[in-house]
Every structure is written in structure tokens, then in C-alpha cells.
Image (tube, rainbow, N blue to C red; front, side, top):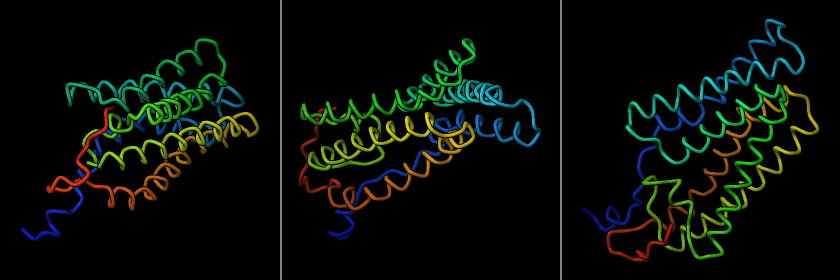
Length: 211
């Protein structure tokens, strides 16, 4: 094996199963909402309430499938799926679509605060969420923690603006696929950092931050 091969970044393949679990609920919500638009029923706020049933059902099925297949639920699917069940159920019980709209704000604001709080304390919570996807130096983890902390807070602010000022349809499409596209684009821009700070077998920069 050449020296260049030994120094190549150690990155695991994307876990498509976990990605499916993460987005099953929002996709189901989008499908129900678009279907109701095509059928013309229900209308008004009831359309978003109907779509919320899709969010709750999709999230519940995805979490159950994850537990059956993997015998455990990874942190991100547990967080997003659990929040979808809680906020979605409250939306249906109280007949108030604003509750499910606020879910993204609450979760992303909490994640952003967690990242920046960890960064201030010299820790890297992002490592727990990413699992074995990448292996970075201490400096790399800290930089990634700071960047994702700011990114999550920006998403929270963007969600607040969209749901409070735009029609339900605009918010639904912003939620899916809008937020997914924004996240993928942001993650793509982190590739240079990940490649630069990836661990190598020679042990350079091998100090691992506390999660």
C-alpha cells in the first residue's frame, strides 16, 4: 500500500437506511399534502392537518422498522422521529397546524445551541450525531461543530420566517424537499474540511475530542 493510500480519508459509505428513516415522515407528509391538492379535498388548514397524519404515520413506521432491522435507533432518527410523533400528535389533538410548523424551529434551535455550547466547552457533540461516518482530527471536529451549530440556528430562523409569513403550501415544500436540499448543499461544502482534517494511520492530529 502506498503512502498516499494510507493517508486517504477514512469515510464510511452513507447509511441509506438511516437516511430513509430520517425522512420517511416528512416525505409522507409531502405526499399526503400534494395528494390533497390534486384531489381538492380537504382544503384550508385541514389540508395541513391531514398531511400531519402522514407525518405521524410515516415517522412511526420508520422508527419501528429501524428498531426491527437494527435492534436500536440511531440518535438522529430517534430525535427527528420522536419529535415528529410528539409535535404531530399535539397538532392533531389541538387541531392547530402551527404546532407542527414550530417543530423544525425547536429541534434545529436546540441542535444549534447544543453544538455551540459544546464548542464553547471544548467538546464536539456533532461527533455523536455523525457516528462512524467520518474520522477527523480534534481541530476538524471543533470546526465542524461550530459550522453546524451556526447552520442549525440559521435553519431555525428560516423556518420561523417561512411558516409565519408564507402560505401552508410554501412551508410544506420548504420543509421537504427545501430543507433537505439546503442540508445536502451545506454538507457538500464541508468536504474540503473533512478531507483536510481526516485522520491518517500515522497518527497525526489523532487527539479525539470529547463528545
